[in-house]
Length: 291
Image: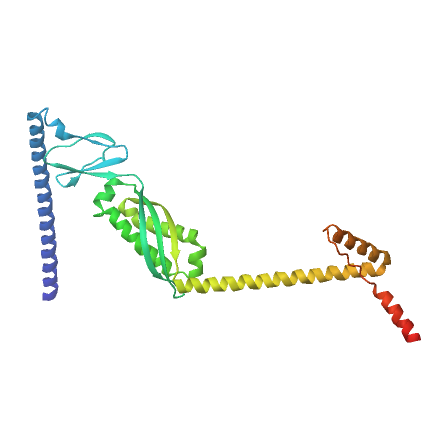
């Protein structure tokens, strides 16, 4: 019974302390709001007393491609980013930051990557990105551009390390799309929109380049030999069919003979070679054997 009373007392004391802390936090917030109102009124008084000179300090201009994020006494001003054009700030209590919304280009330096099949390659890429939310890019991250560039380098190394060499060389478009999706998802909370990622170059070691060149040359020579053999085979078949046609018709042999003579005479040769038919030699050989 005593333990139960002690636990109940402890719970009541913790609840009391929580309520006290909550009330003190509310009191601090109310005091800060009161001080903010007083400083705002004093700032307006200074602007009115120093007119028209204060207008040169209070009115600011941002370009069409820029936005201004205003902080009043350390807090974001309601209404979001200002611009483009003229906007008004109060001296001494307002501070603003300019944010460029144009697309920026980041050239990722060459990264030494060990691929999935244990080949060391040097890969570089280009990332195109821009600020999509000026307020978030200022309030959520210290330096949105620097953070995006570091993330692009590490993402490139991670993606290349998960793929073999032949995929890196042949599937650059899919690798670029995958990298863009990962970067866009990670930088969304920073107010950054990654528009495009391009793999520029993949550099291989010199020894590997020589080995790949030798392999490609050997493959080309093998294909050339196969093509030449197929051509010889087709030519031999055509010659066999031609010989069968000539053998069936004796006049065809005579016509072929005359065609050959015509070809030789068109080349302006001074010597004409007449082929001796084998049938004549065989006739004399048969006559000799008969004698």
